[in-house]
Amino acid sequence: MPAQQDSTTQRRRPITVVVVDDELMIRRALAETLTRGGLDLVGEAANAQDALRLVVDVRPDVVLMDLRLPDSPGVQAIEQLALLAPASRILILTRTEQNRVVEAIVAGASGYILKTAPPKALIAAVRATAAGESVISSQIAGKLLQRIRERDIPVTTTSDNAASAIRAALTERELEIFERLASGRSNHDIAHELSLSTNTVHNHIASILAKLHLDNRIQAAVQAVRSGIS
Image 1 (cartoon, rainbow, N blue to C red):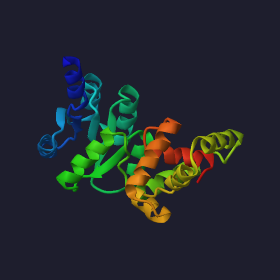
Image 2: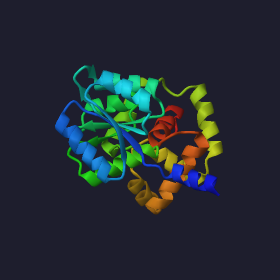
Image 3: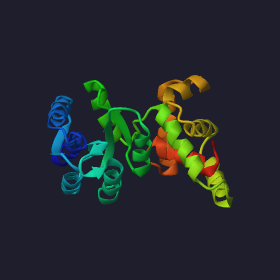
């Protein structure tokens, strides 16, 4: 019986977060918001080098990180974090939806949140990131997928084989949704287009990710583009 209680407690542990920003006032504001939102702030850093050491040491669920840091380009820091602490998901803090956001996601970030976002939106974004979701707008998703289309080699025999395997794994409805992920559509847009509820779309996407062994919808969208299913 005690073992069951311990297991339940462990499953319900607070999401752990490390905040990385060179502005002290912003770190303090974020710390207060995260704590009030029931999240566990386990560390702060003001630059990339300190962030790397801290994240590797404490292994937080989420790294909430400014895209611009004084000692390193944010994208470079993301690449290093993704390599050294792959289990910690990175949520970018930014002032504007700019091209650097796309580069950050390509480098390994799970998404981004604007610094002007209200506290509730910030908390929701951190929780979604910890759950493996990608927090990005449809506009940024579209730019990201276009970039992948421009970089990748045209459909080959390998991608044809991948497409066949994907079509075999997914149901007809899942395949319809999978195809639409490649355009960066939101759950709401997909639901409206297919006359489904957003909850039904969410459940189908969860099933798609599980069947294809993917972590989030961005990976699914990238897979759709690279396999030629888009």
